[in-house]
Image (cartoon, rainbow, N blue to C red; front, side, top):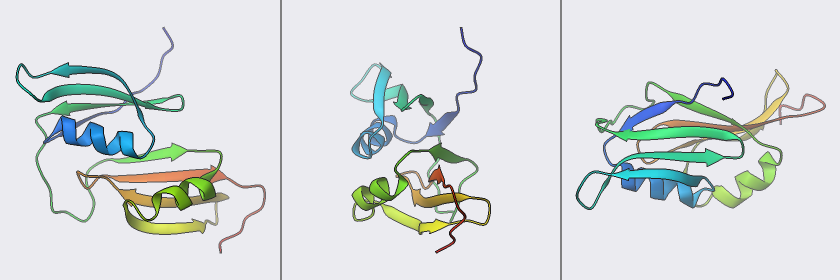
Length: 125
C-alpha cells in the first residue's frame, strides 16, 4: 500500500455532497448507505487525489470552514471556464507571486476548493 494522506470531511448530507462533487468532475469510487435512502460515507477521486465524506457534519454559515482542499490541475484556465457559471466563486482566476495560477470556489457545505496550476513565468494578472 502506498503511504498517503486522504482527508475525511464530515458533512451534514453525504448524498448532496457527492452529487455536487460529481457535478464538477470528481468520480465516486465507493459509497456506504445509512440503512435508509441516504449515504453515510463516500470516497471520491479527482485525478490521483482522494477525499472522503462522512455523515455527522454540521451546517455552517461561516465565510470559510475549518478545512480547504487544494487541487493541482494541468489546465486551470479551461477548468475555470467550465465551472465559473455553475458554482460560487470565492476568488476568480488569477496569478500569484509564488508561481501558481488559481481560483477558489465554495462547495455545497461552504468548504473552499482551490484549483491551481504551476506556471512557467509568474503572471499575477
